[in-house]
Image (tube, rainbow, N blue to C red; front, top):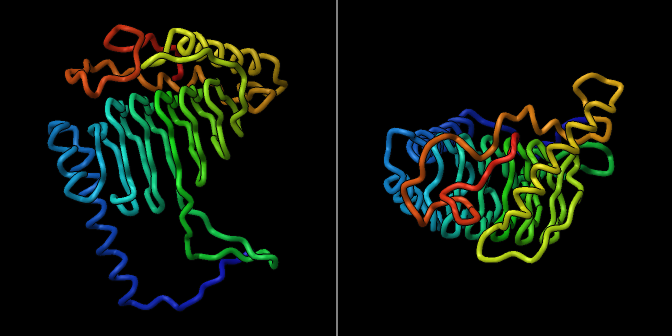
Length: 255
């Protein structure tokens, strides 16, 4: 399978791309994700770049693409090393929590009938609703819609539409449990559901003939090492993660 190039690359075009990438990396990775800058200043950097930020990005975050495509609601918590590719619009609803090393992708390369793929990326927007909890190292693929009050287990690969009030786990992510009606923030049902997702992944691993590989494709959530809790206290009430009355929700392993 070969790439189909519509125009030959030149030294000038490559140099221009390098300059753009260097600027993007400096502003939206080194500075926007710098743990040495106050979160309020990191938020200002993002807003000056064109992003619509109701909450500050987390430490060591990386934003690629067009920052004007990113919209983040109030009270959103980002753990470490979150990467957002904003080639197309990305919206993250209020009071959501994004675990460590979560990757949100929006670029897509079309594959022709002859098997060649285009090297020109097209954008597919990603919409993440309110009170969504995404576990560590989950991957959100281009075009995904996650409705309100959804929990995504660690290591899941998310595509398509995830309907409201449910727990999803696996590769690709599948609905494994229903959640009851939510209040302003995730209830204890959500925390219990995450624990269930971890237990399902662990039991699947034990049942698999291949050591360490879950039989049903569900990633071993317990190996992810905790996707939301980083041990650092939250000092801003506006940027607290979803909780059930405490400053931080009880975190099941691997989320």
